[in-house]
Every structure is written in C-alpha cells, then in structure tokens.
Amino acid sequence: QVQLLESEGGLVQAGGSLTLSCAASGRTSSSHTMGWFRRAPGEKREFVAAISWSGRGTNYADSVKGRFTISRDNAKNTVYLQMNSLKPEDTAVYYCAARPYGSSRETKPNEYDYWGQGTQVTVSS
Image (cartoon, rainbow, N blue to C red; front, side, top):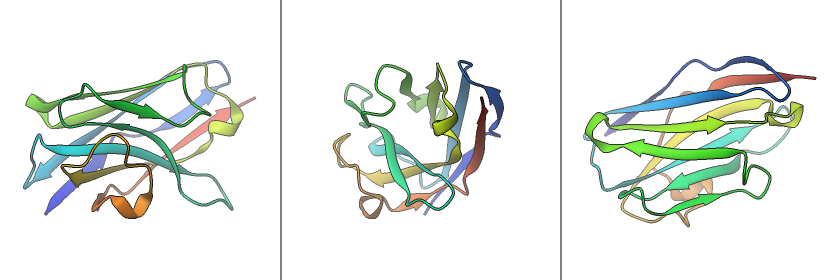
C-alpha cells in the first residue's frame, strides 16, 4: 500500500501562484508514475498532469499547459505541482495519484491505484 498526503491548498488571486506537494509513504517506490487530478464543483475528476518515475517524461492537460509544472524528488518521495498564472476556472479540489510503473501518458483516473485525500485550491477573480 502507498499513502499519499497532499499539502494544504489555499485561496489565491487570479494571476497568482501556488505550489502543491504530495508526499508518499508506505510501500513507496521511485518506479511509480505520479499524477495530479482535479475536480471542480459539479464536474468529473479530470487529469491535470503526470510525471514518469524517472522524471524525464511529463504530460499536461491542454488547459494547464504552459502554466503548471509537475516535478518530483524521488529521494524525498515527493511530487510537486507548481501552478502559475492561476485562473478562477482552476478552482477545484486537487488530488495526487500514483500507480506502479506506467508512464506519463496515463491520464485516466482508473489507471491510478492510490489517491490522496484532496486539497482545495480556490482562485478568486
């Protein structure tokens, strides 16, 4: 089992920045693909970004490409999501996810085995 714990989100003004982190514990492995997803009120959970176990492969949703950056520190079993130029439509609960092996091309929620509890990010206009 792998446990994932996201950092606290927050309230940010439009145009601002926020960095989320996700610490993995338990049967962690640097060979896990890590992803970030989000769910806005009344919407389905959607893919945001993913990073391969090596960190060399990354993938982003079109809606965040150029504004968000996913990275990982395998020595700390932690993955990060740096969010810049935030927009009100980025408001959502953000979830960290992990799956053994795979690749950054994994964009569907059912392709991930482990999930964090979620953290709220609110962007005010």
